Length: 248
Image 1 (cartoon, rainbow, N blue to C red):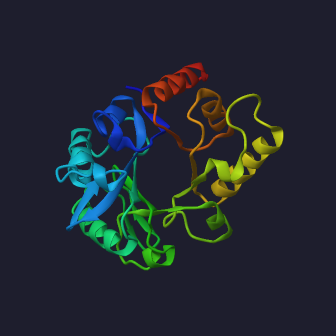
Image 2: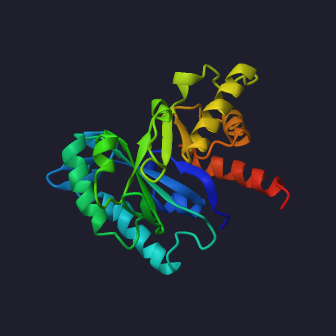
């Protein structure tokens, strides 16, 4: 299995086998949407999709813990990282409070933060969607998750230990839809955003980009850290081709 550090499984829970299909493809980042329902963190995009047995723990945390134990503290024996993006769909504060309690039971699996000190583990969790305020998260003495920032956060000074990612909508910045050539002005704008994010130690991701090879190509060539897709097998094949073509 060739791990793909830049591959992100968007809405991973819609797969036939949540998490497992992404792992079989070598993806190093997966996304789970959650709702707080009667003290349970249920996974789904909309309320009508929720099932009591489809919890964040059963679909993601417990299987990832088992895999990390299998590979001596890693999700893949030879990959540098693994991300679990947790997108909150219900009310921010109560959902985060329940999430923090749940994540604390996985201290052996999840990267732990104490102020600016970081204790890396097999999985780094990232909080997205209906997030508690960045300042609120930063005040916690111990936490098990980082903050998924937005492009305006590039003007701030949050450390990467608090905000490891910056993500935003592709269509907010770019008109190109993958058809025809990527306009030079938009290509340069992408590079500028990427340079600003990397200067602060943040990884960069976009959502809502056209899920087609020409756009993957542009994101890959630019050096965007995480390329999201609903088409995990197609993106896997695309990235395999890129990696095999790269001189070692």
